[in-house]
Length: 232
Image (cartoon, rainbow, N blue to C red; front, side):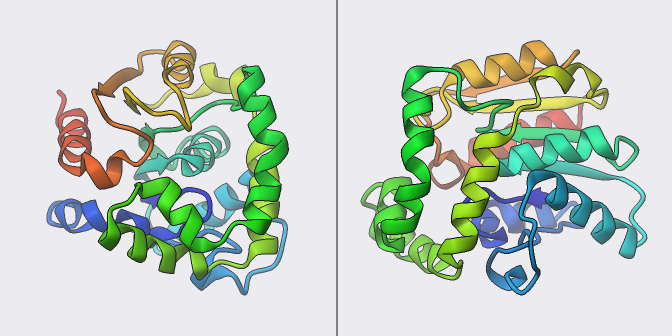
């Protein structure tokens, strides 16, 4: 199960979906309030998202799944592993955090991020995420534009309130943490915090990659996941 990040939807995994689908049954749902699931009403909290995914798996008679959460999707993946431990057989946390208000820069960013979500256009966000790669930026702009701004503001506030630090030790399943060496949105200290808090977890740093590594270093992401899944 692939869990997408803030402002986007399950389509963000298109760069890696086909490769994973050759070996696994892959689900990449849109979370409650996003794109094709925006008809679902509130709350749009991390806990609600985790509950929804547990219900989705049960509805498909899937007793356990490998769960990969990317960016804000990593908070939902953590919540799923904590609230429904029997469901998550292996956990992969990519470019994510336990709590993203650690530094004064992050606290400042947290204060202004709901306003940015409200007032910046889909095109501006797409450029921020992918840089100036025309094809990727245009594709991502369409994904971002499929979401309703008020719901994304609520999702942003839920992200800012997420804090799993006190519960990380409760995650018992094999866990891989993937981070970009040059990730400015979620700097390396977050990955190291997750690795220290989750017993027995592995940390894979992809050098020269930023927060958008799924687009720029997709092969490295796939290789890291496959190596983790085939251990032992």
